[in-house]
Structure formats: C-alpha cells, structure tokens
Length: 172
Image 1: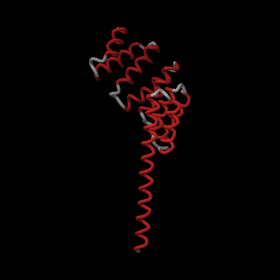
Image 2 (image 1 turned 180 degrees about the vertical axis):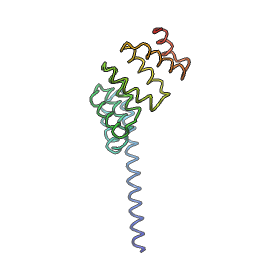
Image 3 (image 1 turned 45 degrees about the vertical axis):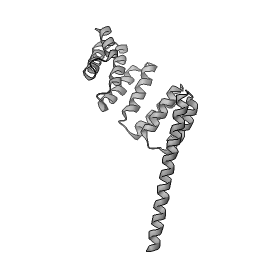
Image 4 (image 1 turned 135 degrees about the vertical axis):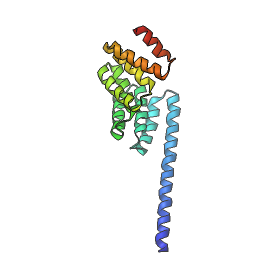
C-alpha cells in the first residue's frame, strides 16, 4: 500500500512539473512574440507564437491572436484559417467572427461581413466597434436606414462617440 502511495505522489509531482513547464514555455514564447510584434517583426512574432499555439491547441484565443499576426504580416488566408479554427473550437467566439468580418469588409465581401458582425453583436451587444463596422458595410451596400440604426445604437451605448456622431451627420 505504501508503495502505491509513493508512486501516486511521484506521478502527481511529475504531472505538476509538466504543467508548470508548459505554463512557463507559454509565458516565454508569448513574451518573445510581444517583443517581436512591438518591433514590427511579424514573421518572428508568428514563429514565436506558433509554439504557443502548439502548446495550446484547444485555445481559441491563441488562434485569434495568431490570426491578427498573420493579418498584420499580409497573410489574410492564414488569418482566415486561424479564425476558422478558433470558431471550430468555440462556435460563438466573437473575436474570431469580428476578425473575419474585418477581412471580408476589406475584401469587399460586404454581405458576409454583415453576417459575421450580426453574430458578433448577438454575442456582445455592447461592442461599439462591431456596430461601427456593420454601419460601414451597410453604408457601402447602400442601406442607409440600417447604417443610421447602427449609429444610433452606438450613441445609446456611448453618447459622445465621435465616429458615430460624424458618420450620422454625414448620413442625415
């Protein structure tokens, strides 16, 4: 019996050590990523953050973060892949849907951008940037009424929002 207890303690200590080592490695590579990103060295930032993703394969936030790095490095296809992976992990992930919406908006796929932003707003009804982005899509689609409605919603959330005030003046 005493031998089983000793083995159990050794196993627990070993597992604890592995968890600690994993956590330290994630911290280290996250720091390396932040340093490279601050310098604008996105290839190095991506390389460092690849290791974080490898250590956290079920962390949707890690994929969203790396997608932002890919996007900033000009690789929208890799960014979309990571954002879709984040959504596969967490179907309602608003950050992932928001990222896809911004890419779709930039590409001119306005209807898909609106669909993604609808999902974001459903999950985070107070996210001002989502309303402002959807307003841009509606305006470009020629739907002035929906654009104005989104701007008014922003002003309900933040009455002095300069972007909403300026856009509303331009639309009315």
